[in-house]
Amino acid sequence: MKVYRLSREKYKDDLSGRGAEISGGRWNSIGVALLYTGENRALCTTEIAVHIPLGITPQDYYMITIELPKAKIEEIAIKDLPKNWKTFPHQQFTKKYGDDFVKRNKSLILKVPSAVVQGEYNYLINPRHKKFKAVKIVKTEPFEFDKRLFER
Image (cartoon, rainbow, N blue to C red):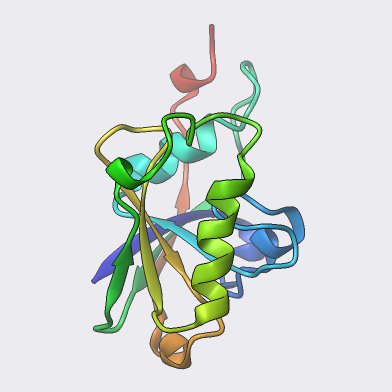
């Protein structure tokens, strides 16, 4: 299975989940390493765009294609989430889902709904899982954002 990730050039080869560990995210608390990926390139683009102020076009990004090994995929279904799961700042209960996933360490992959694009999914990868060593970068290419996404 292939998944995608947009990263700044200096992090393009880093699959450690360290960035999420340092800053936390919707699906993890600070101190919990988790690698965020998207099911397609368009979703990755949108996930970055929502974090960038209008008028600033992101520079120095790379699209990384990642091959995941065959593995059991855990999934969080929208129907199992409270209505306010998409709010910002991120809620503690969504962080707990990801934290528990990493702590249990039973699966490599957690499929979660995108808060940005309805009907799309992100795949969270547990860097502590025994199958993580089989996660491979298969392609890295410079990525240029369309400026129209960031203009008024």
